[in-house]
Amino acid sequence: MDLYARLEEAASYLRRHTDFAPRTGLILGTGLHGIVDDLQLHMRWDYSLLPHFPTTTVEGHNGALLMGHLAGEPVVVLDGRFHYYEGYSASELTFPTRVLCKLGIERLFISNVAGSTNPAYRAGSVVVVKDHINFQPDNPLRGANDNRLGLRFPDLLRAYDPNLRAAAARQLSHLKQPAHQGVYFGLQGPNLETPAEYRMIQRLGGDLVGMSTVPEVLVANHMGVPVLVTSLVSNECHDTDRLTPTTLEEVLAVAKTGGERMRALWLAMLAELVTERESGDEDT
Image 1 (tube, rainbow, N blue to C red):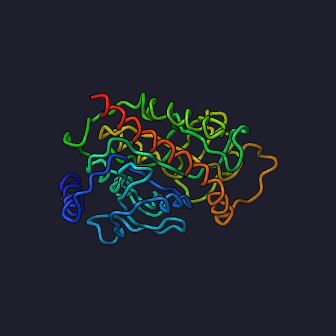
Image 2 (image 1 turned 135 degrees about the vertical axis):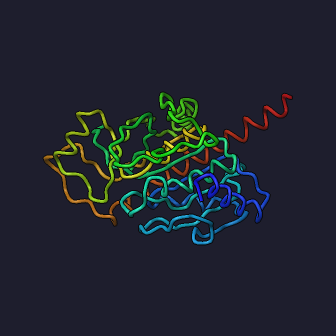
């Protein structure tokens, strides 16, 4: 069964069980699932129930697809993502992202936790990603292209949608949070980087470093869906002479506290989308 047929099967399974029509997709990174507490839940499926979905293996990823309303916006949520280091190919780990796009979402919000190689971005800060540098070893677009999904050679000039980034900056200002924007450097993991690698990332122009996100951004752009990525700084790795070991427990602790900032940002952005849509309906 080819990719398009597998996507059709997964999307058809969801449509058989609900007529809910999400307009925004959300992908929740490590420890960042607190926003689902605000969800007016319509339906929930464990990934194990969904055709062709992988299985999450990392602590901090719940492994469920949810539909409902957040701040009045109809959303579909991937509560838990997949990574190359878990043993999946880039095509396999982005399959759920493609399913969200196949459901007809109009935009995709992606979150992650990341190390900061920029001294201006401190632990617990939210950074809006404006670009990436891809050092991951596999590309989800590798192989035969299906023109029903997207172009053979998608352009990434605006991989991180300028309008969504501007909206995020506006809401961060309203929330009295710094409106940081930075470049995400994607590596494969699961090990954290060496001091020499952190210095390389700085010199190549990376502000953040992580082990996810880039493949999801690639397939969303391939399928023509605008993307917003927000990173929560989990650890600072800009001063390589003063580094200390980082543990998963420390990352999850930062995600728990700093994740409230990202939650507030996303809720404000979703509420703004609803307000703009309702104003437009009233005008017409």
